Image (cartoon, rainbow, N blue to C red):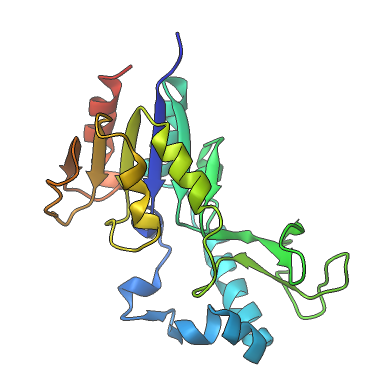
Length: 231
């Protein structure tokens, strides 16, 4: 018997419960940095050293964090469903929890990429990413992150995955940030959908959507129970 396809669309809220802060919680500041100074192509051109140091700090924070119960739930559900994670997060907590199929919309902080060929990717070692670290074509390596102002190139792939889902869960994101939030428009109207968020939203216009008004970690018992009814 084929397993149902469960697509999980995750955002910053799920990783926040592992201690990873986001700029949206800090009035537009990310660990006291202005976004335009550290997370844009213009920032990279202006001050590579600052951008590299900023992401080395963020990477250290990710490495010290641990997957939480919500990350682990989706790994466990692979026993009963074909689980596809689509995440806005750049951390590797889904993978470390055991999820085998993870699509990162906004890049991966544990990887670097060439400044001249975006297809050249490299794992970042414990020393971090420094000035002078170059790709095989001789260009400076940059964080493998989709910066503000850059195209979200995996969005089309993510929308396709959503269109193929039998069950769809949104967790840790409020469906307010586009283009990523538009993914739910590609889920078939007949597909059961869940939004996990402690803040209640008026989303009656989305057919088949049920909200669990709890944080990601606090939702796992309810969410597991409801999903298992479809096994």
